[in-house]
Length: 342
Image (cartoon, rainbow, N blue to C red; front, top):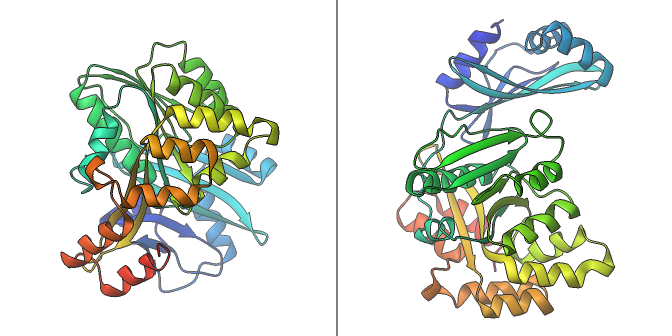
């Protein structure tokens, strides 16, 4: 059985993004989106427990036994890792996310030019949306890097956890981790407003208070970047308003209409060469979009995207078809994605 160091090194050599340690199963790597067993034999309950607890210090082990779950960040010379150790059907197991060492650029991610334009807005809210594990954090890190590389701006991030570490370039990037540097996204955001920011990046909008103060900041002269778990731009208004008390929906609609600058909705698709590539649709908020936010449902935002090419907007259909024409993705992948955008 591999020890901790060997396991992490082997995963990086294989290009894995995640490691799954589970009793009754081989050690599994996620490579290019697929789960791949990398040991011939399944782990016994004792082996799974031993490998999982090797990731923790003695103090962390005591906290784990008390709480039954434990989250931590681990950093060594080889990289950074986000780890969850927990009980699964009475047995101890772990999931390890291998984090990139530095952010990729917008160009390296092959994102449309309008993403760079949105990154250089001086105020307002830009949302990066998608379901789980669609590269939202990677895109936000690329936008932060673009600002940091080209502008003398003060950027504050509030993350859980910090996934990409940014070095100061033309700008200054100060990163705060929830639970370590600030108690919650809300408290970190509220403090950030007193720290002379030009840009605030919020790892995720999770509650009404965070959303409300983020919109207020965006309206008063700060560029706010954030991610939101949602399956399509159609559902964005429904999701945001679900956090608000019914009596406050009107106020939230007004704040959102005034502050929102754009939405980048993305899906991470398997490529024919075994890699992954982002396909995305991009909404730039026009007067028509503002009126929809104030008065109507998110379904009508799709018509704004479809007629907004002159403003740099991109439909998911155009994005996917471009990848298909360049033979980056298969026809089957294209059809499966576009089935949700008709």
